Image 1 (cartoon, helix red, strand yellow):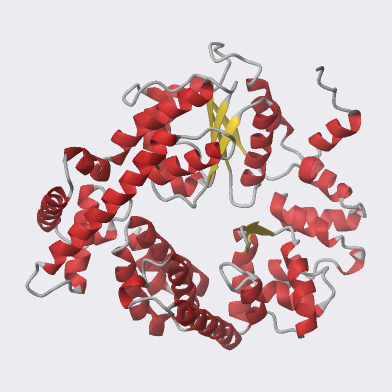
Image 2: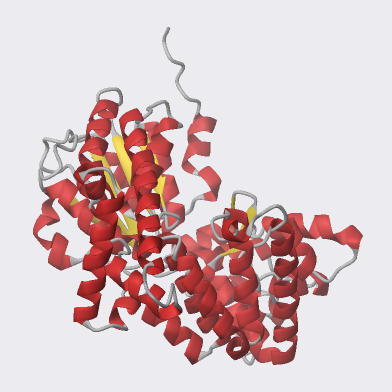
Length: 518
C-alpha cells in the first residue's frame, strides 16, 4: 500500500513542534547527516551540543531525537539520572526495549553485575566487622577510600584524600582480597572491579543486532557536564578503538553539556565530530518567540530582550507572561527575579511561584506544604504551576529550571532570613513525618536500602540544612557515611546534597564539604 503523503498542515506542525523557535542551523546540520552514508567523509558520528545553563540544550536534544526518529532511528536518551557506565548501559537497554529491541544478553549480565556488587559490598561489611573496634566512622571512611582505590567509587576522591597513599593502598589491597574471597570466580571479580571490560563487548554486540533491523541508531547523552566525568573516556574508547569490539557505522552519538569536548581527548578526531555551540537567541529568534506568544509591543519587547539577554528559558518565561502594560516595565532597582515576576499581577500566584522554588522537587503533597492558600485553591494553583515554562516534570514530580530557581532562592533568603528558615523548617518536618510513615514495617537494617525512605531522608536533610546549616551539618555528615555503605550512586547523591545546600544557603562550611567530597 502506498503511504499517504503528509499534508502541508502536518508539515507545518512538525516544523513548529512544541513551539520550537530558532536553532535552524543546528537542526539542519543534524538532519542532513542522515542523507550521508557513513562512508562519506562529510558524515559525522558525534554531535556535541554545549552552552551555558538555560540556553536550551535539552530542548534542542529532544528536538534532535524527534528528527532521528523521523529518519527511522532507534534512539536512547540518557541524562544525569545515571551515575556510572553500567547504569548508562542499563538505561540504553531499557530505552531500546521500549522500541522493540530487547538486549537480553546485556540484561542478564547487568543483573549479574548488580548481584556481584551486592556481594562485594557484603565483603566490605565483613572487612569492617573484622576490625577490633568494629565499623567506626573512621574505619568506614577508610573502607570507602579503599573502594576509591579499587575504582569502585569513580570520581569520589575526598575520602581518599583524607588518608595517606600508603593507608589507601593497604585498605584497597585488603578489600580486594575480601572481595576475591567472597565471589565465586575471577570472572565475577572482573564483573565487579572492571565492569566496563565485561559489559561493553556485550553492549556492542546488542547494538550490532539492532543496527541490522533499523537504518540508524542514535544515542543521546544529555547533562554531559555531570555524566561526562565517567562516560567521556569510555565513550571515546568505544568510538575510536576496537578494544571492546566493533561499533556499527550507523550509530550516531549526541552529547550535550555546558562545556566543549575535552580537546586533549577528542582534538585529534575533529573530522568525525560536529560541534554545536549554543548561544543565547539572536534578537530575531527572541522576537519570533515573543511574537508567537502575542508579545509585539516594542517597549515591552525591548525590555524583555534587555532583561533576558536572549537566554531562551527566560525569553520563553516572559513571553508566557504576555505583558500588556509597557509603561511600568523595568524598575531599575528591582532584582532580576522581581522583574521576572513583574507581569504576574495576582499576589497569590506570585507568592506561590516564589515559595515553590524552595523544594528541590515538588509533587502534590509537597505543594500543599509550601503553598499557603485556601484548600479550594490548591488544585488549580498546582495545575497552573506545572504549566509554567520554567518548570518541568519528571514522572509525577515538578522541578524548577536551575536558571530560574537559583535567583529565586537568593531573593527569598535575602528578603527575610527568618521566613526562609521557617519555610525550610516546616518542609523538613513534613519530610520527616513522611519518612517516619515509610519506616512502618521496615526493620532498622532495611531503611537505608529502601528507595522511598532514602529519598525522604535526603529531602528532610536538605531542608534541615537550609533552615539551620551548622546545627544540621553533623547529622547530615552521619547520614552521608551511612548512605555511602549502599554504593557510589547513593554516596554521590548525598555529596550533591551538601553542595546544593551550601550554595543555596551561601554557607561556606557546607559548600566546601560538598565540593571537597566530589
